[in-house]
Image (cartoon, rainbow, N blue to C red; front, side, top):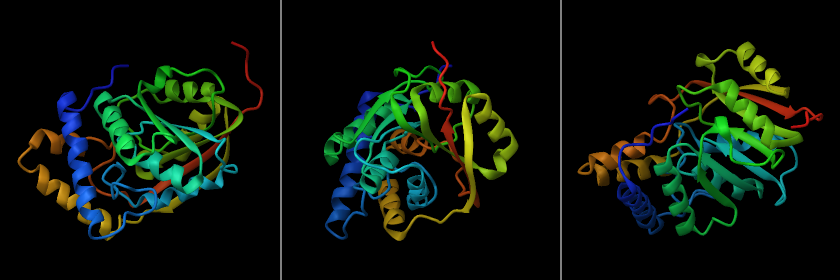
Length: 253
């Protein structure tokens, strides 16, 4: 499946990354950045407070040897946040090559590329060996993609007994459908949670307002930034989180 890149070119990607860095630099003169969010949430790519993802820490014991795959990693903010919260390493896979470039640039400027790495690629054909990851997260429900094929590939690259977390908008996906998708691709559901979401804090809202003002005269860059989430523009009332484990018996080949 061909995923469209956000509007723009490599120069636009660099310009957007520079704008995000500039807003963060100015804000650091006024207030400290939240832990794990050196860009004040401008790279989080979700309409709710990223702290909700603390729930991911309930899966397994996170140490430096834990290696997480995040599919649809966007501008890399969730991965950077997770490494600081959990002490793990994260590889972010993003079909939009412009977003992957920005994520890498932001990782370089924040000094976090030792814990987070980003690459372009499609989730239906993951360019990784089988059993490469201890965990996989799917936190951004993109539209128009092949769910079963993606889950099959995620199942392949997660080690036997490894963990998977899947975040869905509750009003757009039924639990029965989601559980069946997981069972069909080699996962055993271990827990389901429904959680109400919380709006981002004032710090992130201030950062977003400043970036939007900065980009008002540069419509392509503003559009590129707003396209980095597959969520509706409105914040969902609740999320469905499914936790699963990869079945221990792997079929050869």
